[in-house]
Amino acid sequence: MAEKSGEATAKDAPREALGDEEAFAALAEVPKPDALASLARACLAEAVAPLSADAVRERAKSLELGDDDGATPFGDAIEVLARGPEDAAERQLARALGALAVAAAKQDDEHTVETILRLAGKTAFDPSPLLDEALGDRADGPLTVLAARVGRTGDGPSVDRAEAALACAILLTSKRPRAHTEIARLASDVTDPLLRALLSKAMEQEARLEGELVSPPRSAAVTVLLGITGLLFVAAVGRLVLRYVLAYKCPAQVSTSASGVRIHARTELLGRTLRDREIVIGRDALVRAVREVRFPRLGLYVGLLALALGTYVGVGALVDGTRAASPSLLLFGLLVVASGIAIDLLLSTVLPGARGRCRVVLAPRRGRSVCIGGVDPKRADAALATLR
Image 1: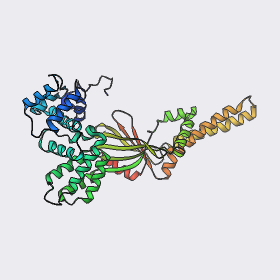
Image 2: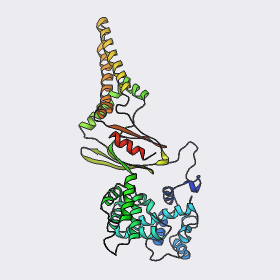
Image 3: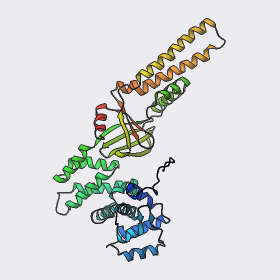
Image 4: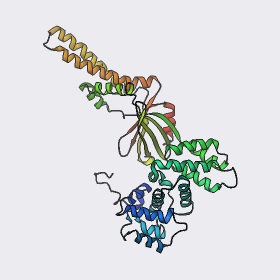
């Protein structure tokens, strides 16, 4: 979503500055996206042989696509289908059209893989960089088939080694957890030396973390404000109820490499998965990636707790001496403040630190920071090293 701060939108930005994902998204914004998808499917996924430029234009007319119905910030999609791409932006559009054709064809997994390999290996309409966006959860089936082809390399003359290498490359470009699982399995199982070297190198360059998706750390000012107002007590009790009564948790698997960070997280409640999501932060979009010390903000919490308890004791002594009309409410409020600070200190600092765990904070250029808790410090350092 474009910012309102005067930054250029996708339509205003130079074509070379936009990526494949933006090209794929642009295809959904044309006047007749369904008709364009049908044209891409007919030209790329279902055609036995490449269609001539005249045949493509005739097919576009039969689908009632006008001269401007294929216009995108990357070029004219209909013309790219007819004559092929001529510059860098049109090559991005061609890859997006290939992904659109694969998604629109809705073939079974085997035929989908055949289409992907044919387009990726022999045309400019390579859909492989956009399979995750185009197929969504449907991508897991084709990814499994691609992995099976890589695994069969060396078993006999029927397996094309070049095709297996292409399938391996496609697996390495996917961000889906299924692709990561298959790559890890193939890295130890595949017998072909070239493919084994490719997969092993990919595994060496990628570090993995396991933890839990938690709220990003608050600033000192916000922590103090929440503490003295008693809201910290409410939030801390709520966290206790969610975790120990409703079994709420958000386990996360993090993969870091030179290209960026991929996070696969689940939201679980009472043992059932409520949400499954994937967070991808490219290296260029990552502003800051750090891990906290073992006991973060310990001094701040101890100071607040000492202040609250000292105030409680001091006000209690003062009330006992003066016998004010209603001292109990003030004392109760101070006790709530102290309890909230103590519980939050215990949950966010003492318990993780006592287990030798830390939090990793990832701040993207846009959007909220992502925080992974319960991470081993040594593995966190190794993972962050791959981003440098």
